[in-house]
Length: 430
Image (cartoon, rainbow, N blue to C red; front, side, top):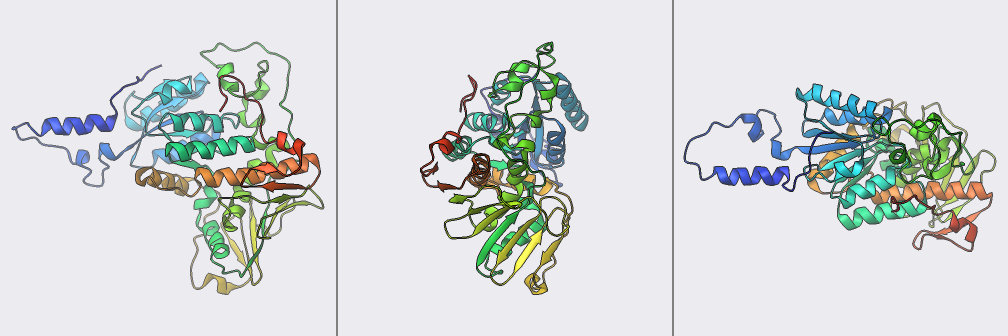
């Protein structure tokens, strides 16, 4: 392990060095890069980034961060030694040095005062807990989804970032992709008439609460190679078994078998929440799965339809927004389908297929600098996840549920209310 904790931040050091230099009477030649000239970013303007839990998706995200000229990646934390080394080698190759620090315990990385922001791409069992720890340590956070496992965690996440004033961006990158943005704009600006329904189609679908999982004990690796206790984190204790090492395959947020409604709902239900102007609330009524769909309703009567079947061939994560005078559909193909060509109003919308994170990461970095709110901020993520969790609970209990999004309770249903939270393992309760 390398790197160290310091009580003097990088920015403080630079400002103090500049003040000391002001009294020097000898002329100095300062490289243009230090001053931010010739297209370079001055060191004092760079965002110092650390990363926690970097596997498949995390490696892609980190690659996007490394493309940004105002980011300097300085530290990796992972419970797997192989991943720590791989990320360090990638960073050191980019910067031509050996400076990237490695940590096994995220608390050591978070103690570094020179780190401004962290990328969290652990397994879902860690997402909310790591984000909350990071915010309390004064870090801004870009966190992969699903961001929370329960309604209670969703509320705790939003409360923490509101209290600390840190920037949070959920990895729901479709909020920053042009054709999805345009579809949401049509709904929010009344271009479809009075909004009637928003449709989400989670690509993977499952029903019922997922079991915590169990498997026979296998010999546990050496801690320096794989720290099993830290890998579990707040998840329930269980003996080591390699089948659990694909972090997204157990303790997935929302407990859906296959992760359906939350794993993909944290994208497509999230877009529906945004289109319905519901980033600060959630539906008040949830109905169990019936005839290929589950229907929820907002207080204003707009329907949220979570569908098992698709409609037009628009790729993964398709959404449909319906008003009383028009509708729009979008998906990962990059294309829009509109009830009328006139909805384009002469505009050309970029068709970007797939779901690149570059735009979303740039939105996050801009917010880190401005201290504004990014598109998928903690409050928006909180309520879109609550909508998914509540829909999941309704499907699991196989009955209609009424929900108060101000008090955050199910009305008249003690069993449903018990499912709003779960026990977290010490010392990771948050």
